[in-house]
Image (cartoon, rainbow, N blue to C red; front, side, top):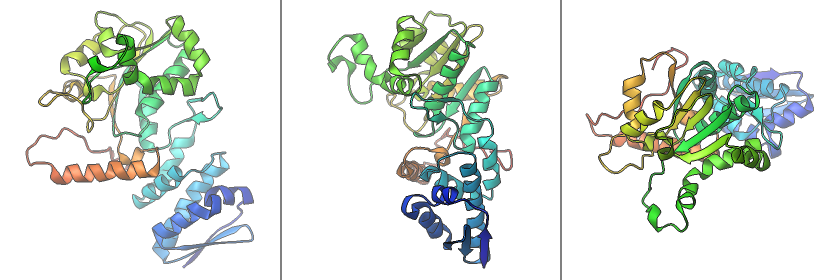
Length: 338
């Protein structure tokens, strides 16, 4: 079976095929097809089913390229995964008006997967959003981008970023320096995202004015946080009491994003996670959304996606019957059910 995609510019072909045709070779290997270029057309050779799948992937990449996107390996892997689910056409919903902001280097920050688009849409629409998923799915980074955009647009007067300072096998007391020096390593990922999106100079200036605050969760006790964009990161490491304390700090005009990875808890054995409890207690309250991301939404190096998927498969295989695993299945957007 031979299929043809016509009227493609040389720049789009170069973008879609990748340097040294690396993306084209990946697509050929995945579908068992052969791609050739003749007179500005892409010819696809293979069985009818495989050729159709390859064409769908290439046409989706072409639509991304024509909208000014630089094709990356993550785009290729994700579109192929969507095609396997017969869901590649829904990719177009991601690109429409999806740019949140730009980094100091001018790179656009925007959702790259359907799960990330659902996540950012929920943040816009709801007062409190729980973003739950594995490492590399952009939970914290996208929330940070949304917060900085709201701050620059004067929708909120300040940004508050917090994390529980949980000891992951190492004791804080043995680290050198004062209390701030001890907790700063736990907050470093938040600083890194702020520097990248806002710029170090702008961040320092706003932090000195008290308009941006990065602090351990314990510092939130006793406060009322009005007109603020509040992000609680690594929420799987909170206790139920800490989570309740945090949620009851929220004041008028505030928006809250809570992120967590339920597979990477650093709590001591037998301690219940505040994220698990909040999921059970708050899931029926209006204006609170729970968004579940999966390995399919990982946007780091492709190897990270494979590692996350391998761990998910291992844990599912070795889970004891009746263990009461609270991990939710990824949202099935085709059938609108879990």
